[in-house]
Amino acid sequence: MSSTSCAASSGEEVDDTFFSTWLWDTTRIEQNPAQLVKDIQKKKVNRVYLQINHEVPILAYQRFIKSANSIGITVYALDGSRTWATSGQSDYAAFWDWIGYYQEEVAVDERFKGVHLDVEPYLLPNWEKNQLQIVSAYEEMIRDAANRAKALQVPVGADIPFWFDEIDSTTESDSLAYSVIKMVDEVTIMAYRNKAKGENGFIELTKNERRWGLVFSTPIEIGLETVPSTEGKFISFASKGEAAMMQEIQEMIVIVDDKSTRFSIHHFDSWVNMKK
Image 1 (cartoon, rainbow, N blue to C red):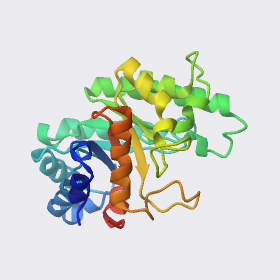
Image 2: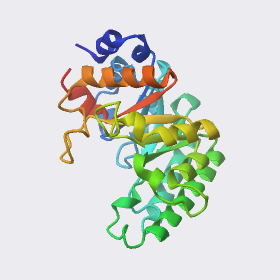
Image 3: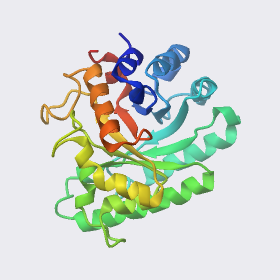
Image 4: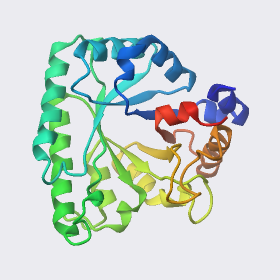
């Protein structure tokens, strides 16, 4: 049973919902790009965050993006590292240089439609000790990314955990989540919980971010996990299955009374392989 069937059985709300997904194994666009695009289409995905792998030939990106664009699936360039705001700034700059070169060299229908950053500075070993300095460097990186994206005339989005609304910004009189949502064009909240309702559900955990998204006209995506997790049974939908995930998604849409709510599924390969 495909997710299309699952979505349909869960109601019209889910069937019309905007879905994005992360595609981390970039080599897949070399192997059988036509089949990959078909598989993505079956999941009713609107957007793919495709990690940049410099070892994958540019021609493979061109073919995949052109094929995806032809059926209305947009592709964003994805990458990031915990160090990008601190010791890994050269890698950060190299990513943007590659994007700039690529966008100039290929045809319009082969270009990335945007850039998506997955930078998680809280994974640095000195996060607890030097949080203030790291947050400051991270905010500066986000500001720089917004300027670089503007120069390339593409939107830029960022992944942030749901608890960034509990971290103080160094540039705003509010939280780090508020600051990021204000600076970028789109934000994906890593709201990794396998239930919609309740104190620990993804509706409650994303309420601040969704409110700020409205304030700044920044689209907010609710990121959900399908990769098995060792952090707790409440994190991922891996054991519950796709139908259960679609039911929880529909529940949120009904409760918040907003059919424009977007969802991002992490990640495509585990989503395809999860139980129905």
